[in-house]
Image 1 (tube, rainbow, N blue to C red):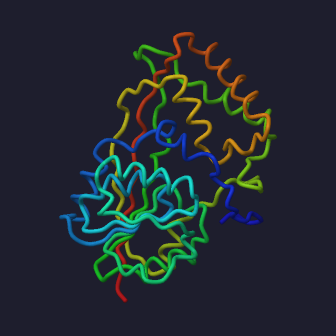
Image 2 (spheres, rainbow, N blue to C red):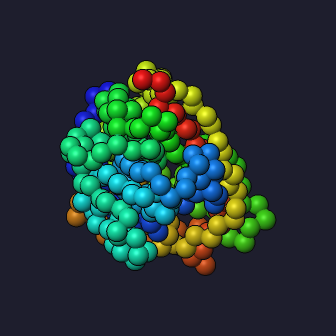
Image 3 (cartoon, rainbow, N blue to C red):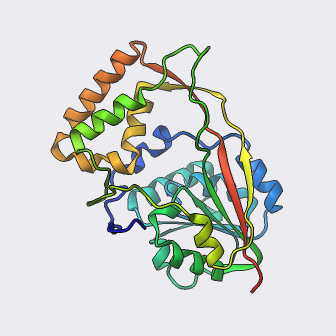
Length: 280
C-alpha cells in the first residue's frame, strides 16, 4: 500500500454498478493466452484476488474445476454473483467477501492465483507470502494489467476521442487536486515495484506476455460516464450530495466534445506476468 495511506471500505463504494459498462475490457485473446501458457484443461482451482465484479474469474471459470473470487466490496460481490447466474456458472464459482490480507480459513490450495489491477491496493508483502503458501507445487501467480504506453490515436476512426484530459480537470475541480482514495488521498499515487515484492516472497520468473490491442472501439456518452464512476478516484460517494450536479456538468462536457454522443477509441493491450511458485 502507499505510504501514509490506509485502506478503507469506501475505496470502491458505488462503483460496482458502473464497472462492466465503464471499464474497458481486457484485450481479446487473454483467455486463449492463459489457457496456453498455464496449460489449463478444466481441472485445478483458481483464486482471483480483488476480483471486482468477476471480470477475470468468470472469463476463466470453465477452465478450472472451481474458481474462488475474493473482494472486500459488497457491491462487487453482488455484481459477480448476478453475472455468474446469468452465465449459468453459479455452481463452478464461489464468491468470498474479504480482503486478500484477511482470507478466511478453509479455502484450500490452488493451482493458479490471479491479481488483475488490484495488487497495488494491498499490503503486497503480506499478500504475496500468503498466496505463495496457498499455491500447489507447480502453481503460479498471474499479474494482469492494461499495457501502458500504447497509442491512443483515433485517426481514421469515425468519432472524436474521449476527452480524458478535460474529464480529469473536471474531476479535480470538483474533488480537489490530490487524488482521492476512499477516505484518504494519494498524493504520490499507488506504489509500483511488484517485481521486487514477488521475488522477495520467493516466486520465480517472471515470464512476460502481451496480448495485443489497438482494436477500434465505439463508446457512448453513457459508457464514458460509467467509466468515470467506475474509478476509485472519482467514485460516486466522493461527490456526496453534489453527485447529480457533477454528472450534469460531465455530460455537458461530453456533448460539446461529441454532439452525436459517440466516441472512438482503441482497445488497450493487456500485459501478463506469470510468476511460478518456485521451489519450496
